[in-house]
Image: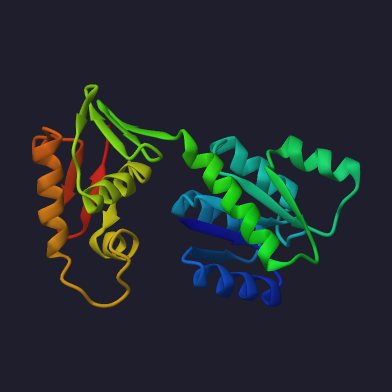
Length: 220
């Protein structure tokens, strides 16, 4: 899971990054509101931790902009503000939760896990006639269940979540294989070919396209 932290205080974002990475999350940092929106649009995180007061753009406006493009990604405010009016303003902007500063890392971690569980519980990802149900660990092609290995399932999920974007081989090895050192990315081609065969995809015109010399892209 990928978490975007939009926070300008180094002491806070370094503390959060270290703790969340130890828990197995992939973490990206943005130190102001404008960069936060840019990184959100570029990296499609699974959850956002958003500071209320930010340079460049107020946290409320950042939340509104995120919500305008994506209503599904949970946004958790990190804030010292706790009045009823401010809470309502945040909820109206699209926030899903508040973590009041100062906070314990354990509390924050539990809130994050709850939002991830809620999001994944009934989530179905689609790519044309393909439907992937994360919680049921099920893939359907034209309503027929397709048997995939765990690695094939994770690869298909990653490509669908990033459909319309080029996924480089290095990104796939890092995010799906969880390998952060130099590795033979040719193994990806084997799994892609297996997916195409099981999902009845044509190599040239199928929904998972090869971007020569770069990687792959899922597209409707």
